[in-house]
Length: 119
Image (tube, helix red, strand yellow):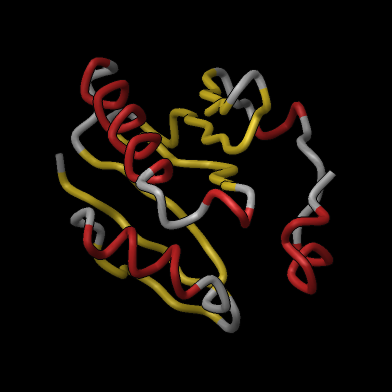
């Protein structure tokens, strides 16, 4: 379920095999899953962050930063030199996190922004 996205949930679809996601990390608190992030290969030397979510009540605790760090390390181990992501402009706190983590905006179209980080 993606109900925790509130009004934004209408813009997201459930996972599809077509997304070709091979790696997923889940953050837990007391055996309760409270966040996740996924990685997939985008092109020869570019990885992509997919499906980064943190339950609302656990935001602001550094969990998303920890998940980003894990994906970045994995991306480097895969030999990628760039990490890409796409998000909605309405997710301002996520965009701020990405900017503080070294991502820069590469493209904006309507409600979506694409960002990258050189590794």
